[in-house]
Length: 60
Image (cartoon, rainbow, N blue to C red; front, top):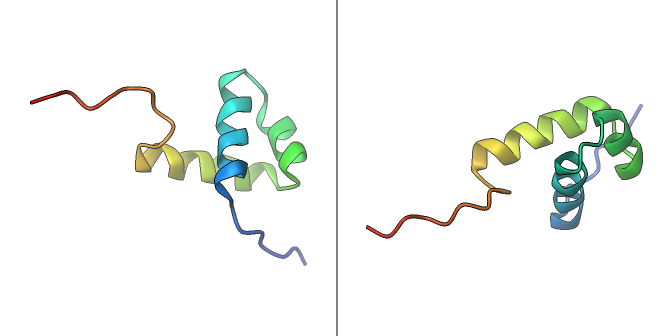
């Protein structure tokens, strides 16, 4: 049985960097020693949080 690994900011940054460079989920998972499903779910969570975007909030 696999043991859950805590996601670090560095893990998340690497996930986002690799995905932005066009790496497939499988390669990202292998690089982070995680499952493909784990990296896909985490990427969705990051997107939902709004992290990893380069847009600055508009002044209002």
